[in-house]
Image 1 (cartoon, rainbow, N blue to C red):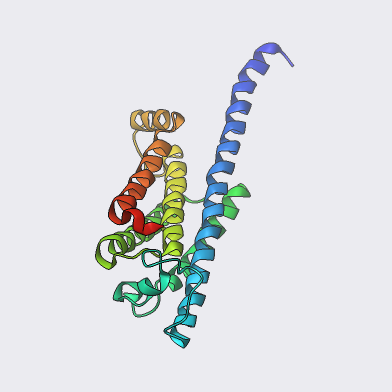
Image 2 (cartoon, rainbow, N blue to C red):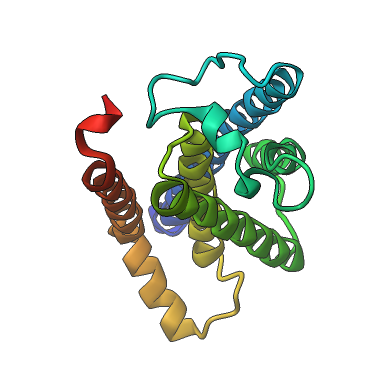
Length: 213
């Protein structure tokens, strides 16, 4: 094969390989935290049943007065739709896992599906953080498994958002999309998410201080 043709093909092949690796990280992260979120939702559902059977039951995530799932489960915020919030996770996280597995298998999703998924993941993120701030500033008690849900939902949302921004799912102009890809190439989105999670940790520490341990 002529060298000129090789030079033309190699950048394309390298770009394709880079995209494949990036997809593996994106959907692998989504799968990992989808499983973590589903595990947390399942445990919370089981613990809720135990609490209904015995209001004085000692749950596996009751560590002290601050880290105490039972206290949180007895509040109105734990079932704002008339059933335990964890049931929503039991329904939602399997969808996340299915999307992640399909993405790892190389499925190319329709744009409308990705847009709808981003909205759905975004609503889940808003709900998770509403519960987080309610727990920190209104209830004054933390549920460890709920914190797993919050972190998992954050990273799931970020994973899909990174993919959608790279693939221009939202239909940005060519110039704007190029700038977005440059932003992603420098991993600034990851730094923002890491900074956000660190900020949430600092808020918890400032609120509860030595009561955590």
